[in-house]
Image (cartoon, rainbow, N blue to C red; front, side):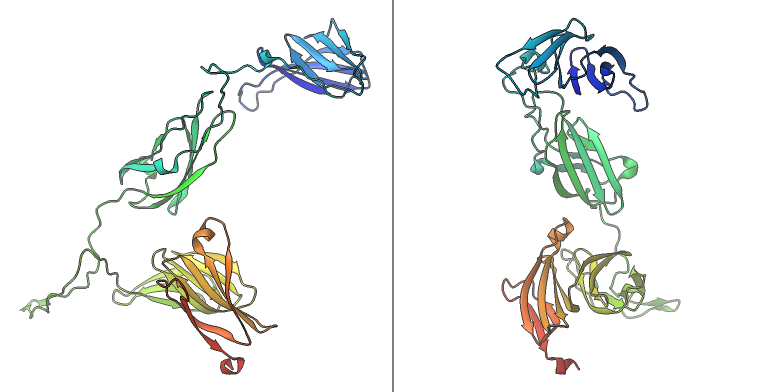
Amino acid sequence: MGLTLDTSARDVYWIVRNYEGSTLFKANMAEGKIVGNEVVPIKIALIQYPDIQGPLCYFDEHLLWLRDDRNAVIADLSGANTALLTSLSLTGLHVVTVVDKALHKLPEISDESNVNAIPDPVDINSLKIIGNFSNFNISWNPVENVNCGEVFYELKISHSHKRELRIETTYPSWQYPVDEVPPPYTALMVTVRALTYWGNSPQIRAYLHSPEAAPSPPSYPRTYVRACTTKGCGVPSQAVMARTDRPSPVPRLLMATNDTLSLADIDRRDNMTLSHSAIGTITDIAYSCHSGKVYWIDDNNHIVYAKTDAKSKVLSLNGTGLSLAMDWVGNSLYWSERDERSGISELKKLDLTQWDQGITHIQLLFTKTSYSIRSLQVDPFKRLEKYIFILLLPIDIN
């Protein structure tokens, strides 16, 4: 029927009503005790008021509860020495509480008129990585608006090489464990929020990189000087001019079969499998060099992406997928699809930056009736009319 706290003695009082009457119980607060250590309640008294309504209030080593819609009862902590509080001007009482500033004690702070126990968000611009590729800290500016209690921080770090790390610390910096350090210049998604025992700030999220390291020696350099045998060396080849300040990766061939999607380096005879499960017939394919992801439309009218042998569905189409293109600057995916019943073809766009954050925003750009939008291409350097395609009538397709 009611429950109240004695925050000074750290006790809990409550009343349970049954056919025998109302029983007053007491128990100590758990105070962070290990789960499994049972807190045993103590039966204080059987109160002979079967019509007790509650609620129960504690104040100044006394208990107060409602007896009926006109009267309240005050008693000591054992439920004895009761007195009836009656007011002829009040009827229909169903809630009663004690207003006493002494019940709302505050931790030791300098200014009790300005209590702030809820932390502000961590300054996202202060989030940074300090150190070298083998030994570094993730640091941020401390939250300083709290004047009541201690501030601690919840830090989450995730990247493609290992499971998510979750850390709680009272210091605005955390050293990455040596045995957990990711490879140099790994993209890290770092999330931080400040907490107190009374509440927490909104979390902030930033994408950082682990520190760089000196690059490894080039593998398979595409330069030819001269060939030698046991009989001697031949004539040197022509000089090769190259700019070392501008990387020029060698193009690779993207190949798809019914059960394998792979990137091949023909010169090195190296074939990297991106997906080896049954992927079905591919309608069209697009590739982002910056993210290393391959996108395609399959015969189930799904847009799917793969990266280093990990495959995931982006979304399902409403119609038949016809063509696919990538804006690698704006990080957007364009595709065309056709509703076979109505004959309407649509050109649509998906913002992949928002999609990575869990927001699927599809923008309809163009609609054409009785035509199919094929051979879609995107020019990422044009602001308007950046997509080019071929319109085909059904007779052209057949």
